[in-house]
Structures are given as C-alpha cells and as structure tokens.
Image (cartoon, rainbow, N blue to C red; front, side, top):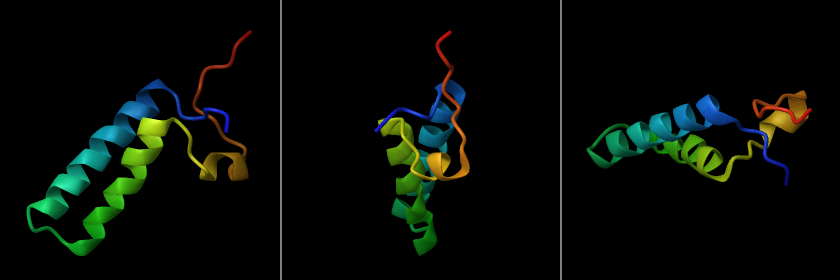
Length: 62
C-alpha cells in the first residue's frame, strides 16, 4: 500500500471527517457517519479510489 494522499489533501480529509463525525455525535443525520471514511483515509494516507483513477496528491521524488 503506497501513500497517495499528500499534505493539504490529508489535512482537509481529517478536518472534514472530524466535523462530520462530531455532527453525527451531536444528533445530526445518520449519513454524517460517512465522515469516518475521509478521517480514516487522511489518517492512513492512502485512498483506495485514487489508484483506480490514476491519481495521487503526494509529491513525487525527483
């Protein structure tokens, strides 16, 4: 599993994920639990969708 989620993308995923999970915990809609997905992909640094579409937000080594 190669890292494919870079800096700003990773931070945004974690912030959005935490916000959605917090909303769900405070009585928001059930679908807000989807925040677990961006939270996990941001924390791990790997998004399973990115390889399927040939994308990566990590900086490449030159």
